[in-house]
Length: 585
Image (cartoon, one colour):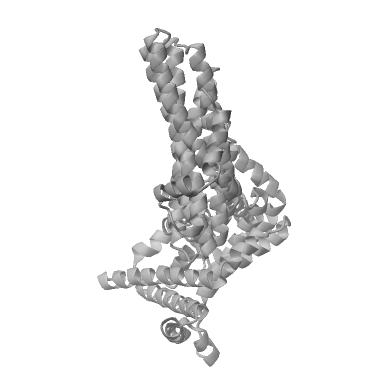
């Protein structure tokens, strides 16, 4: 085997992997999201789950893709872990379809039917039909069919190229002796697992093994442990996709891993035990592509039949591996998982997910603010830590919601969804800034506690009035957002103007107390920080309300809008005077 044979083998491998990717993408696009909806509506019947997992995987030609999709549904809370187990088992069965298709390359014979079934005959025809559909037809579904045909043709061409390139290896003693090493079950399984983990596709690694079988140097004794290892290696994709996901999503990925490990151990132990007594003669025979497909199928079907009744046990094992978090805010963490990238292909659904998560973010910001204000009267170290925890969580919400909305903005959105997206983009920044101000207020409370500072009775009364006004405007603004209440939004700006007046009055009153010796400069700095943060919280509440009022007009010139409201709205001054009566210093 010379350098040109090596280049041909690498080129064939590249074509094979690329063809498999193209075909899988085409099949996924052709499904038009229907597969996701089918999985989402899954019943709790384990047998139906297995059949569904096998069917979906047979269509998209990738157990890894199916398992990753399932991890996404569990991650977002749409699917329970118990429902996912059956699908994962079925995905392992569905992936064997690929090995049967690839076994066509090993067909031999001179009859017309056999010649037609050979990839070297039908692959060029499929490629020609596929490229016409893909390049010259405008209908998207027909383009997707063309992509599938071209991908399949490339895949089979790559398979043929690999097979042809490795045939000379049959005469290389070193190559033949290499496969005798793989008869060792541990070594064979390790090689199979590593190969599959690297290319992240058991279908592809089985195809490579089938191509190597064309040399006649691979016996069933060497192929068997490699196939067992390939089933373990395919779990790497789901494990990678679960990084940073929810607890149950991680558990789903580990269910996939444990199913394949336990299945491999049981199947291999039974096989080698029986072989030690019966001595299967075929173990020393050269393996063929069809024989590889048979072993692959028998293993996955048998493993599913044996382990399906113990699906609860697999669930418990994954729960023992991934423990529940013993911390607050787990429900909020789970809510954040609704922003799954798989939902971007369904913009209307994704927008609703974003809105739901943003409402949670708003509530977190509000809780943090109210808790920080409580510290001014009743200091508590646990409450201080809770304010910090909530602010960190709000920051995460803003980052992830913002990133998700930017991705979503590139999709084909309806006018209504476009308006909702604009509101969310504008409001998440205000919620995050309100959360920042809660940290500033908390730090002022900490400073007072450490320095043992206390406000005068007059300052306390004024601060209570100010806090009550802030409580009302925050509650009002967040209700405006969560309930899309534009009528209530009209009451926010008048209260914000009153709060501006309260800020100025409190600072003036503090100067008077300072002159009389009733207050200190240090307390004055703390009070100024507090009132400034309160006033800015009110500004952000105003921004939220104005955004809700303006979005229908596709206009966001806040300054112009507020000037118009203050000078031309006859009820504005009336509302301001009403709030002044409620909040007098």
